[in-house]
Length: 313
Image (cartoon, rainbow, N blue to C red; front, side, top):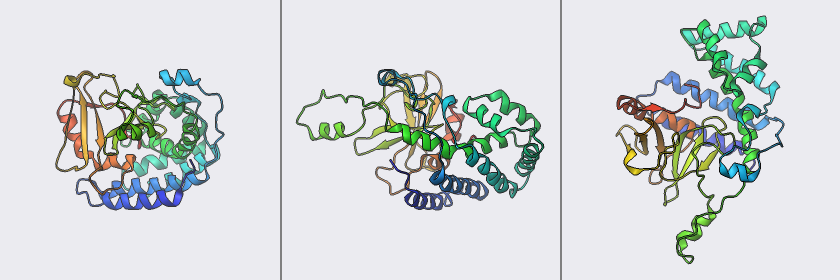
């Protein structure tokens, strides 16, 4: 599927307008994230990473093996370096520790102390020690480098994932319902749900769920490659718990159209977007911000988030 920049740009602008109406979201945060998202969209138009061809066999992918391991994702190195500098210039205009940390990172790149190719490799390989080492040098804003690296690689990663999505093997849908059922006909038009919670493209865990269509088909959004894929209606994305008495959800008035699903087996939570009866724009990465009040409640109730947001925090 080709990337439709014009449509994505309009959707982003509308979503940002919705975020600006939320009193619990600081204006500075909305400005920063919206500017980064706009830069990423523009870059995605021109991103040209080599698309890997050595993928997992179809039968293994259906059983849970990702098509391509995260560490094997390719990226547009020249573009990623340019984005690092563009994003650093943006962060440099902020006030306080994040600006100071960005200046330190920029100086480290110029001096050769920070090798961007090594930083990109560390992100793809989830080398936390690499980023912790740099975080220790910037204690007031420890996630600045990981934010820059993640944001700079995202256009390439999404481009690769979009190309690989067309190579996912088809899974046969459950046809145990009446064969003449109109509901079954619609069901057969949809991708069958995966029997595991992690991403079929890269194997990473999701950061959000979304309910689609009047039937409430459940889709997950990957925290790494942003792929959206259908999953089972009732199962924990992290530990695969599927007993109803261990899974529950709740909502809060401050976040209409959202709920948080919690698992009492592994004590994690996952937020779910349900805009089926609400006229709102859905962009998972920004839905995550808009539903922030649910994070506070879930943590207060003793649950932990299973992964960071796609912004790295």
